[in-house]
Image (cartoon, rainbow, N blue to C red):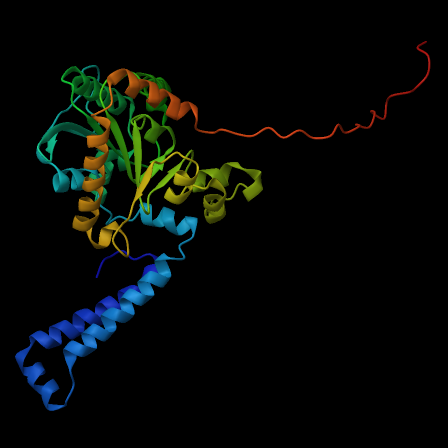
Length: 350
């Protein structure tokens, strides 16, 4: 059984436990003989329960709310950047440091091979346990992390190697030290410089795509999102705490999540994401290997397409792609007569 459990996963977990218990019984020779003596077919019972579990899973995951998607994107058992790199790439050599100040463990990166092609893989890295989460700063990059990421991107560009970035962060670090070290400038400079990288850049949102922390390594020619990933200008809790519409109450984060339209499906609808990678039934954390294979296949296909585009056309299309985000329509309204202020008095001036 996968732990911890989200509320909507509990009915599924109960059936998981029952299936495990039945399989243990089937593996026990003595119990198997007793079952056969009692005319009980354990294998058939396991198949029946598995079928019931799949039915419930399909019902549950077909009706997830935006807040449920947020919970899925943050699931502590969900595959992280290094998990995907190790699953779909070989010969990964991690590179460290920003060559100015420090090495930020919240962002990892290095050269590796994807289907025999050398690429630069960069991404946010969260931690599994408390010690590692503290070491990785919960995936929230500091200025040194963004500088390291840009250094690696420019290194890849020098050797004409494609770049893949994996996005999974609640936001960039926002404490006093980060501000003093220029976190906003580091993010803005990365965004600017990524528009000029003369190599294909693929962005894969694998979990949380949070605010500037995501954008600092997320300017690319293709944006891919895992089915249960999210992409948002602000975490729902922070949005609810700021806006009076939600009573400045962090407890109304689920309402804020719905208003923010942060799911992969919304990102595809608004032309922010180019494609959505289906996850195994129940989420990537239930079958990380299958999720990695699906993501790897999409990245490989996108790279093959991008590598055939001339550099000038690639850069021009990258620029046009981001300029088109946030388009709107102007609607003409009939002129409305506004009431005069109460202090206005008609008549000749004195």
